[in-house]
Amino acid sequence: MIKHGATEKSLSQRFGFAIACITLLAFTSIIAAIFVIQQAGTHAAAVNSAGSLRMQSYQIGTALLTIQSRLISEGEAFDVRRGDKRLDKLIGNFSAQLDSEQLYDVRRSDKNIEPGKSYKLVETEWKRRIVPMLNQLQQFQPGSAEYNALSNQYLQQVNQFVDNIDDFVLALQIDSEQQIRILGLITLFCVFCTVGVAYGVMYLLNSSVILPLAELVELANQFKQGNFKARSNNPNRDELGLLAQTYNQMAESIANQYERLEKTVAEKTAELIQSNLTLEFLYDTSRKLAGENNPEVLRSILLKLQEVAELKYLLLCYKPAADSNYYELVNCGTTDNIHPEQLANAPSLLASMKVLPNERVPAIISELREGQNQYGYLYTELDSKKGKSEWKEQLIQNVADQLAASYSLQHQDAQERLVMLFEERAVIARELHDSLAQSLSYLKMQITRLKTLLKRKADEEVIMGVSNELQDGLNAAYRNLRELLNTFRLQITHPSLQAALDTTAKEFAEFSGVPILLNYNMLAKKLTPNEDIHVLQIVREAVSNAVKHASASKIEIHCDEIGGNAVTFDIIDDGIGIDSAASKKYHYGLSIMQERASTLNGKLTIEPGKLRGTQVSLTFTPQIMTETPENKT
Image (cartoon, rainbow, N blue to C red; front, side):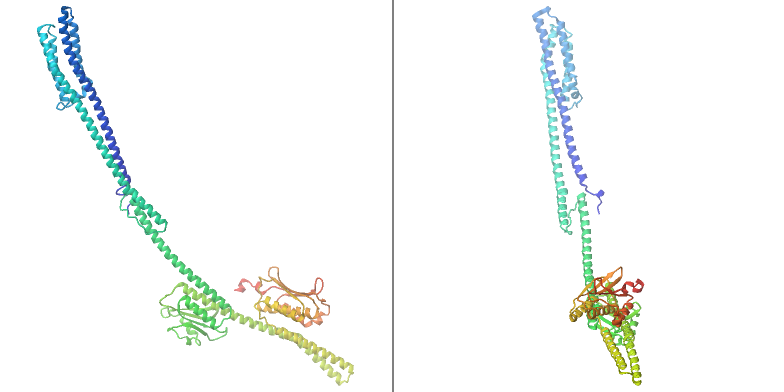
């Protein structure tokens, strides 16, 4: 992996080098131009100075000719000293011009090349020939033969001297032209180099920046669209190459993570589907077990469990009754590991298999246990191709727990029914003792009295009185027997107390013609089956009394919750009301109602209505509301 600070061909370095090259070329061109311009200015001054030398040479010759002509024309009247001074001045000006600042660079230049060579020639001829000749000329008297001879000699040589000066000026011009030409070549070279560097920069920009950047933009667009397989082909070892390699690594990592996430999502989805199927199966199992629990229902549950958990074989061994010493079997699938028919009469064999090593028993054995009670076993063999998993074991155990709870409820319901049967038998015995047995004892006493009267040959009127009392006692005993039979034959076949009360109201309304209104407002309370029977008996007795004895035109039954836990049942009629003889007239019915109220640990009140009629009220706290958490467990 290439780190950012270790790129082999850094774009910033390459572009920086290109910019440095362009800057260097521009700087070189500028320096060369400045140098050539400076040299051109120096040569121009030298050309001017050289031109003035040419003029001064002719001025010296003109001064000599002027002296000669004025001597001829003026004679002795001409002031020779003035002519000599002017000549000296011209000679000094020439020497000063020859050594002037303008010609300093020329004097310092190489003597073997032009214009240094030309300058040396002019300087040598001036100092070695012209100046000595003029100095010698000034030693003679103007107008003399020697003076005239030397003057003519200067005039003859001045043309050659001026030609040398012209050569010097020409050399200066040629040198200036060469320097300007060199400047042009340098400038042209710098321009060509700058263009080359600029082309190289453009090529580098296109190949190393624009194209890789466009590729990265295209990769980013594909990445945004969800294509994680696109990769960069940038082989460069620069910043963008590093960025491309980093993108490839990032895309590879994200693609791997995306694949792992897709795999995880697929696994979780499969688990969720399996969980939904499992929950649906458990719900359906719970619903089925809440209804009738027979072998067909159990077989359908086992078949569904075999399908959901992918099992090879299932065997359910359960007790048909709480006190049963044998097991009933329900199985599905095939197995070679056990013999199911041996387990019905010897359920301990299946229990012993539970403690065997797993390698000998390739199956799951779950107990059907609720608390301290054991109701059987659920034996399951897994498909070797599918293998064992935790959720399958949990599902099998949940089904076993539901089956155990169902059997526990069945056994508990059977026990409750047995308790109810014993309670009803106790009530029957008590009612027979309190009503029919007392009536028969009274009749037995009356018969003994009648026999005594017959032996004594008592009056016929007395005997008829005793006989009438016997008749009334028999009628009362028969009536009590009918009431007891109606009471003891009553059973609740409806799914709830509300439905049973509604049926009772309709039943009495049909044969009596009295409208009976039921107002049931007990939504949050639940009564035990024993409480349902006692409440229904009390309501029926109260409604029967209102129909038979109160001459009511309307009866209302109100079932309400009061306080925090208690419930109340009010039977209200608009009849003639209850009088003081009611305790005798309804002795047995009212006493049975009081007994039932006492059994419920409740209170029964019978009192006149607010306007007219009678109101019978039963108030008690349901057993389920009085149970503590410890009792419930």
